[in-house]
Image (cartoon, rainbow, N blue to C red; front, side, top):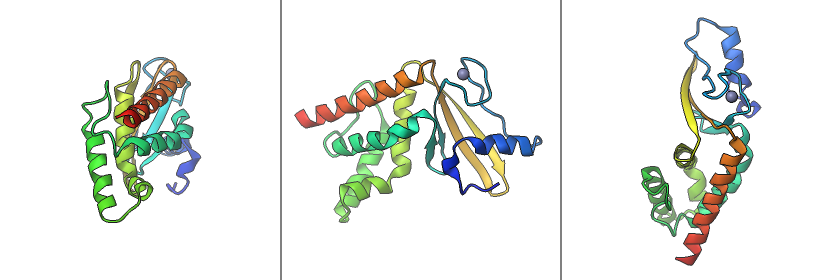
Length: 175
Ligand SMILES: [Zn+2]
């Protein structure tokens, strides 16, 4: 089992589970329906070690990145209710630093992929009705960390997050 086909989504952990029941891997249980499979309550699974995202949020990530790229130079902190966000400030600092080194905004932003996902995760963690479970998979190549987000209505959560980022972009424009 290799991690080359990360794009193949969540097959990975299920296969690992089937292959090796002695493994310390424990599938995260959905807090809503108690399923250990990827149920309809999954908003996203972030493969933290690899820096990838899977699940329904995945198709929205590029748009979310573009929105944040649009306001990161203008907003020092994320607007409420997420404005305590140290991850965002860290990301902003690094983007500005690499732009001072001559990078374009989009290159600077792209280089910070891990930090961008941290910000998305903290936005999800602040979103109403969202809960999360961290888990790990031990493999010969090392320990792989994951975090899965659940909600009773994942599509509503994604809509809320998108609207939040749009509102932040509007705020940046008017400031
Ligand atoms: Zn469920």
